[in-house]
Length: 367
Image (cartoon, rainbow, N blue to C red; front, side, top):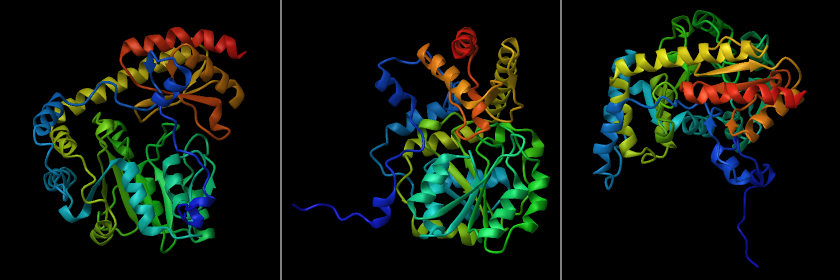
């Protein structure tokens, strides 16, 4: 009997996925969610101008996309005051992280990240044979000093830092990150994942020269711009680094209509300001809900609020499970002590009211 001859690396990997999507959970349980508050999606929606651009582009969906994403890259370059050659467009930050891992990671290479940080990055590193070295969060923040120290200890090729971070919603001032770059070990590239940067205070932005070879910044159109389903992300970095993406990326991987929608979304600055206001109001709403139930909402610089349930991971998991049984989809961080919390996405008042109504019963059931 013939069979595919898989690589030894593939055979060594566990049959896991980074996230179990809400649709998968709904199909498994046979129960739809009434409030979708676990995926950090922008439920307020994208710019109407972006939706119209997508509808118009759909009539030409028979065409392949622009393999260079020229117009979109030009807009990003203008808005960020960087060169056209400092930008690569990809299928969300997830896609770009996968390309970067393919470019940088060989079997046995060391990579440093935080214990509890974005699992999709870990998934890509493992997929190319890298060895992950994890550093615990410190006081619900990523521990930048410890990350850099560990990178030096293991001769890491990559150091992953999200700012603001997922899953806790905290952030490190950008000036602090910039100053720390001088301590980054030689030959280590910092991945600065700024997926939530448009929703963060101004001092979260890191003043880094785009041609600085020590850093690549990742940005997303999924959060503030509400285009998670379109799968659009981009990276800013030194031109030689960015050029190397062309050696391995899927040149026709972008969706043509999504390219047009992303361009229109970036140009609609009034809608972005509207979303920033809506998210802040939702953060305030979630903080009130937490306080009303004797819980603590952690300060958030993102489009979600992490709520400390005040006990251990087993208790928080019981709260989450009971919320799910009531049709409320939320998530929780993975490792202790972060797993004492649940993480709730910002959303319209109606959805947050459903969460508020379900939470007291979930807390009582978890006792």
